[in-house]
Image 1 (tube, helix red, strand yellow):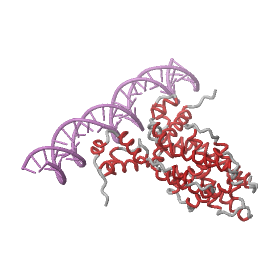
Image 2 (cartoon, rainbow over the protein chains, first blue to last red):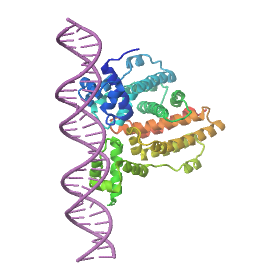
Image 3 (spheres, rainbow over the protein chains, first blue to last red):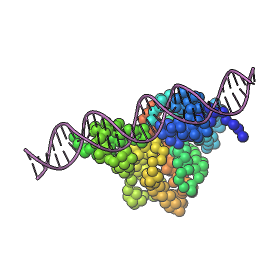
Image 4 (cartoon, rainbow over the protein chains, first blue to last red):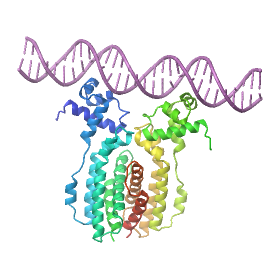
Amino acid sequence: MCVLNTEDKILNASIVLFSQKGFNAVTTKEIAKKAGVSEMTLFRHFESKQNLFEKAFDKFVFSPKFRALYDGLEWDLERDLNKICSSYQDTLYRNQKIILMHFKNDELNPDFDATLFNFPNEFRKLLGYYFEEMKNRGAIRENPETLAMSFLATNFGLFITSLVMNKLTYETDIQVCIATCVKIFAKGITC
Amino acid sequence: MCVLNTEDKILNASIVLFSQKGFNAVTTKEIAKKAGVSEMTLFRHFESKQNLFEKAFDKFVFSPKFRALYDGLEWDLERDLNKICSSYQDTLYRNQKIILMHFKNDELNPDFDATLFNFPNEFRKLLGYYFEEMKNRGAIRENPETLAMSFLATNFGLFITSLVMNKLTYETDIQVCIATCVKIFAKGITC
DNA sequence: CTTTCATGTTAGTTCCTACTAACATAAGTT
DNA sequence: AACTTATGTTAGTAGGAACTAACATGAAAG
């Protein structure tokens, strides 16, 4: 199969453990074991646990292509919101380990916060612009910023719920909830 | 003013620190200092850090009166959803420290999870029952369980967003978002 | 064959943290 | 005055975790 080099093995192992337990609760010994290397090797590749964390963070942050999103708008409420929602959910999903890690750590470094909060902010701008324009076109009436924030928060709630639901045993399918929410939202704001 | 007894001082200090940093990241020395007592006193009142955590958890879990909620239903979509939403947001708010703590700890004890997940589950039942009845009355068409889950997830998203927003500087008022969301939701599911 | 390089192993240092023991103090109770 | 009770102080133990030093090994490269 694909044989990973040592650094990648360590980075992969660390991000999984960090997201499961948070930075402080994970030991370097644990990471080394999961990566299948000795603890000494870990310290030879990364000067410290902190440094390993930073490298892992950088490696696993993901941001979508907003240009394509802007260009792909069709000015049909349900279709556009579906597209934006899909992209946002996808981005949240890809960043899930980092997001979980962020929740679990107090404050490692304000720069991480800034980096991590970057993409929700971009989505907020996109939605703000979109609702503004739709209001000008007379398709909706509500305040664009409020709508943008509400739509983002709703999506984030659905995302977190789907994460937590893996542990629980609700019969409800979260994908259906997401689709339903977008439909309700589109219908609920239409004039 | 009101002078707290020693145990309450320690419990209050611990819940604040636990919610800020998570169980592992907080030291008993830190808790004692914040409580204004010596570390020794802490151990005299609580046999261990773990024990202190459990007492603090028990003290600060809050559950609303569901009986009153069921009895107060008026079978008017927007009014009822507003009432349920208010109660849910209020419950989330009162449990915010415990919820944050829960996010930050890996797994201290599955019993805590069960206790903490109890009230969202009760709200889910309430909403399921409500939407089921509203469907029977012909007021809505969507699947009741999906709606219940979606409404809960939306609310949770708004709650988390309001917590995070304290750190950020968005101009949007989260209370307005909550009210808007309920209105959109009510309008979006009406036949 | 020898050198180099990445890795493993083992032992150890330093620091922090939960938790304890022993004694001191100060206020209230009997 | 003697006793009780709650608290503080100081010193210390035991264990864990980050990180290091020194040496061993084994495979690839010259």
